[in-house]
Image (cartoon, rainbow, N blue to C red; front, top):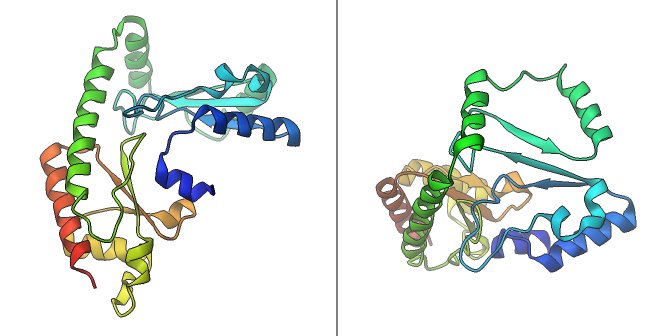
Length: 231
């Protein structure tokens, strides 16, 4: 299965896939950069598996990236961490200290207080809210006629496969590409989306459901109405 098909299907890598990545990294002498920023947002029967925990043999060639902007809803505060072999971290610190600024002191103290005293209640509430928004969004999107309902197994995004819609889009002006559909949705439905071309997928569309439920319902309802009306 190619990368685009896998992204559309699940977003969540299972253990066999992670083992395949690990085997390839060892065989080809590659490094693994493992982004765990969405690790707290895995839905239904899926599980987030840290690659270095389930396959210890790749620990020496793995860099783990994580942050708090997603799990604690600290968007914009830009505080997180990188974990990996000591010699690599030392090199990263030497490079980073001369190229970017440090996280602001408020964010540092806020995250430190959470790590020291947090009981998980906030994260649990956030996950519950997102799970409810996800289900409501899937219910609305189930009315799409020429776009499959997304799996949305991880993160807080709906990723739509526009292949069928684009195949029948001749004569629809700028709607013959994912970028064109993004523009049309903004002008016709007042809905902002991200084209899959950003991720190397020219037929995909990404929508966030991390917004207030009523705004989400209105936005997705408008999107469904507009997409279903196109011929």
